[in-house]
Each structure stands twice: as C-alpha cells, then as structure tokens.
Length: 264
Image 1 (cartoon, helix red, strand yellow):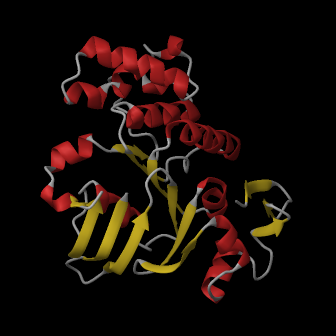
Image 2 (tube, one colour):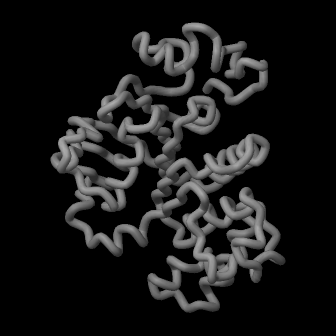
C-alpha cells in the first residue's frame, strides 16, 4: 500500500505543485492520477521513489516512511516505467531488461534468463533479445520498458505516462496488455496520465487532480462517471457537453462511439 499523508511540495520560486494532499493507493490495484499539465501528478509519483522530496508530510509504503529508506535501495525495489521508455541505447533489449536485477547482485546469466521470460510475458518475441532499442518500434520499446520495470519482481510499479508517445492503435494494445498483466501479477500500480479515457480503461481507482495538486474527486470509474463531484470534474470528463466521454450501458465511449473502458 502507498499512502500520502498531508504531503505538500512548494518550489523555491513559490510555485505550489502539491498542497496538503492525503491519499491511499491500495495494495494490488491500479490507482490512476489524472489531470492536466501542472496539476502535480508526476510530482506525487516521484515522491514515492524519492526522486522528489515533499516540502512537508509523509509518503509511506506499508506504513514505513520512504524518507527512512536508503534512496538507492528504495528505487531498485520499485518498478519505474516512463514515457519514451527511457531505454539505454547502447545496451541490447535483454540487457536493458536485466539492468536492475544485475545492480541488485543477481548473476548476469540468471538476470538475462529472467529477462527472456519477461519478454514473453509482455508480448515480445525473445528472438529480439539481441536487438538494440533503435531497432524496435515505439510500441516494442514501451513493452521493453514495462519488462524492465517488472524485472526485479517489485511489489510496486510506478508508470509515468508510459503510453503517451505512441499512436492510438498501439496505445490501445498496450493498455489491454497492462490489464492482462495486472490480472496475472496483482501489482500495486500508480499510473499517471492526462487522458481520462485511459484512466477509465485502466484504473481500479481514479484520482482527478486540479491545479496545485488538489484532489477534485477520487473513486471507482463508475463513481467518477456517474456522480461527478462538481462542475470542474464534469467539464474535465466532458460530460457537460458530450465532447469527450459518455456512458452507454456499462461501456464508456468516446465522441465517435468507440468503447474506451468498462464501468466496474
């Protein structure tokens, strides 16, 4: 479980990225932080692995303050998947995936064997193991990024707009793959996106953030879509005019009628 207790982040120029926010991301679920640019969602995500330190408040994993953990060991114990994959261009696919286990002391041969297994898990052909990132498509690179995040078998996976740089067809495929993986692996996933359709499609729990890191509403996809808390949330969802999303039975569909998620 990840818990934010009254966390705040104010930068030296006076910018308030997050203001007195409390939130729990339950164990074994996908919690999606969604909002427009500047709402503090990536700042919150990076507080979990101490890439950002809060000005005040606490971030806890299973009731242990991350500030009391060794930062390097903490980061190596948490999976991290970012936009544009962040792969090391001079390393092969298999060695990119094996990076964290090797850093944690796993023998190279064993780490590579685990990497090959994960390639199959995320839908990659193990025959691509000796390729370099530039020899892969954008969608394949993102799958490598997910495999790398899972390589040390972490309980927690942080995902920072991981599918934002690929085309819509590949993005939908990656979203389906993540849902399949989560059904199998049951990780605690904190997922950041600016796309409410993606949040609806993936989240067990959705947290809509307003400017300054304020929680506008949190709840299940059903609660968010059927009971928006205020006009801001309704406008963000597009429910005020039908521009973006609408509910059609148990399906959430976009303005063209294409299903983008299912209410649970």
